[in-house]
View (tube, protein in one colour):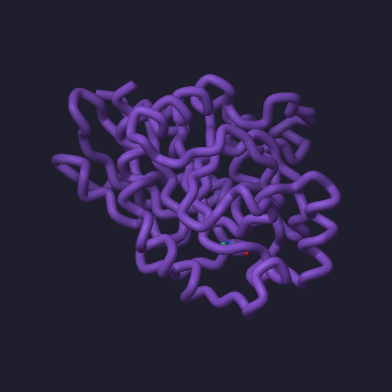
Length: 244
Ligand code: HPA
C-alpha cells in the first residue's frame, strides 16, 4: 500500500503510537538519510516524521528540511499535516488554541530554501499566492470544529531563524507587518513541499504570547509544558483530518 499522508510532528509531538503496525523506513536522498515511521490508521497508511528528531535533538536552523521533504515525496506522500508550537502576537490566539496557518512572513537567514539550485536542477520560480494547501486547511478547520476544539481558521506565521526567541521590539515589528504567530520552522518546509507538489498545511498550537506581550521572560520549558498539556488536541485533530 502506498503512503499518501504524512504528519510532520513539531515540538511536543513525537509519538506516532496511535498508528498500528508501526515500522521504521529509512529513505536515502541526495541530501541525506531520513528515518520515517510508517503505520496504519484505519485503511490508510500514514507516515510520521519527528521534525526535531526523536528526543528533540535537532534545532530549527539545522533541520535537514530538503532531505525530509524529499524522503516523504519518495514514499509517495501527497498530503502533509505539519504541527508547530508557536508564540502568539494576537491576544485572541491564546495558549492552548489551535490555528490553521494561511500565510507566512520569512525572516529566516541561513537555510537552504529550494530544490532548484540551477544547473541540472533547473531555475524555477514557484507561485505562492496560496502558500498553504487551501483544501487541506479547510479539512483541518472542519476536523477541529467536529472535535469541538478552539481553532482559528487563518493566521500569518512569522518564521524566524532562531534558535533564540525574539526581542519585544521584533515582536512589535512583526505585529505591524501583519503577523499573528511566530515560530522557527515553517520556512522552508512549506516552500519545499510546494516545490515537491505536495499539499501541505500547518496546524499551529499556541504555547505562549510573544516576548514583551507576556511580561515574564520566555523559556523553552514553558513551550514544552504548554505543548504537553495540549498535545492530545493536536493528535485528535490530525486523526480526524485523516478520517475526513
Ligand atoms: N517564538 C518563536 N518560536 C516559538 C515561540 C515564540 O515565542 N513559542 C513557541 N515557538
